[in-house]
Image (cartoon, rainbow, N blue to C red; front, side, top):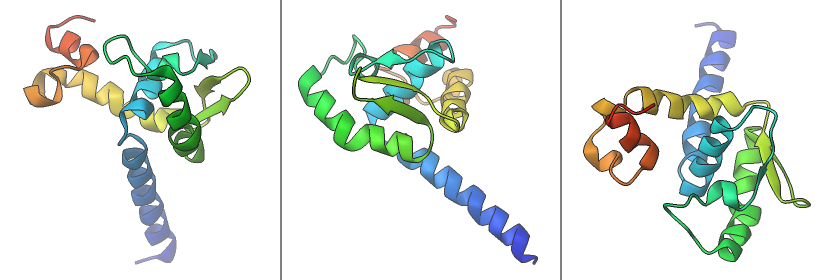
Length: 131
């Protein structure tokens, strides 16, 4: 096979691996969903964007985790850009790579096993047929 084709395949595999690794932590998933629901050019306040009302974590503890772990992971993939002052996050140039995963999950929420949707407000709403 052609080396260029092999390189393209490996690059695709690496992108998917990065997407799934990035989405492996709840605060990062919450940020992606919050940004998806906001206007494309809007920066969101942190830690609020990573702390929905149905999960409510300690804001100070979450802020430390965001700065030292979650935001660097999201930024490394160019999925988000973030600032410390004011503490905000916005879509990055590759944001669509992670957002599309949630769009697909929401589109197929009725087909997902209940153990993957129960307790997730957005997916439960989709299962009930709410927009």
